[in-house]
Image 1 (spheres, rainbow, N blue to C red):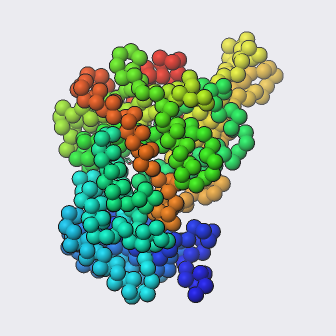
Image 2: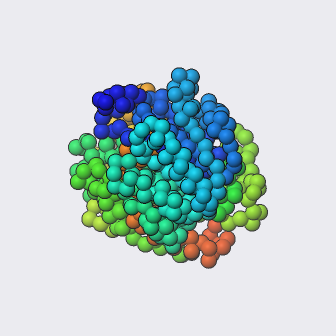
Image 3: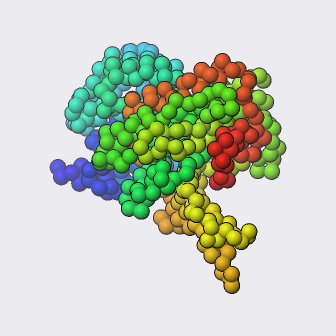
Length: 513
Ligand code: BG6
């Protein structure tokens, strides 16, 4: 049968982006992420004609749920969270292919039942299915799931063939270097590295991918992208939401594990890495690992400390008074979990030596905004500086990751008039204006990439370990310090004074994004 006919829904992408017939199995099927992100992502892929004709979704969980009930759960999730308006026609195709298998994560017999169900589907359609196992459970059951995928033979299905099994694993990928290494060992006992897709949903965001396009598809940036022209870099991932209903998880995690170790470190790696020899997964990840390796160990103590941590206190957000972290439901009244963290990093390589990279993230901040700001060195100001009203601003190139996705450049311009006065002005490119605002969600891109077997936007084992190697000493230091050095900030502000000092020490200041 001609390929076009085998993939009647596959009209939206270039041919090499087609996935083989696939069954996606979600472990943690009744979880929040499944409803909010995974099922809507799969639905939108179906809507856009990007799933193979032979596609199945199997939810796997401890609760015994009939197929029909899981289908209803999926339909409700799509209705509430889908990017696109649900279409009865698309759902009519997907619903009968949405199935459920129940069982314990540590129960091998349940994995055998899952295998039998997949084999039954293959028999029905008369061809092999690639299995993509999506582990979206609490981390306590990662290991038994991986072990049972091995013991039941599911991990080795069609090994090294086009339909070979793959596994996507959600965060948190460990809680320190030792546990990340242990998890990597667990995974690679059962799977080969090319079968493993460690997710960081920031890499699925359009603007994060655009960073590589901007850097490497435009000739004007590369000559400036180094210590000769760049003064420092600020990476901000600010959230306005608080801990919400996730205190159980967050109390064990904190901002450094939840956001810095993964999302902001990934943004740093993409900003600072060398041009890869090609855009394939290994070349890109090789460069990311190289730059992570070049980051110097942090100074943790005293006035020279490279880190700041803080907790949100009472404050005002959106005109409403809100309470501090320790008063949130499920949070210990003497909790030392940080809801804000900032780091000053030095990358000791030829390109970046001497250029500080500042990272910050926090909850209950003034606004939800994520950006990477490249601050260039100041032009000599003497030509315009004899006038006190003149202001020569350093040029800043800012990648707005979200919301209001785009790219802006601050330049100095002459204020119209009969004398020469300057003013910083902003050149702005907005995604929504140029391309419209209905861009795919990160999870759509990532699920599709894993189905195709493209690991470029996933984290390799050595990458995650290197990142933990940098972060773990901070946790150890903070644990030893207890409350000492834990700063606080008003909810709705831009963070604690200690984070300002981190930049102030080098004559810098956080920019207001
Ligand atoms: C998750 C964190 O990884 O990212 C959450 O666990 C955080 O605490 C979320 O809220 C932020 O993601 P986004 O896509 O909304 O910026």
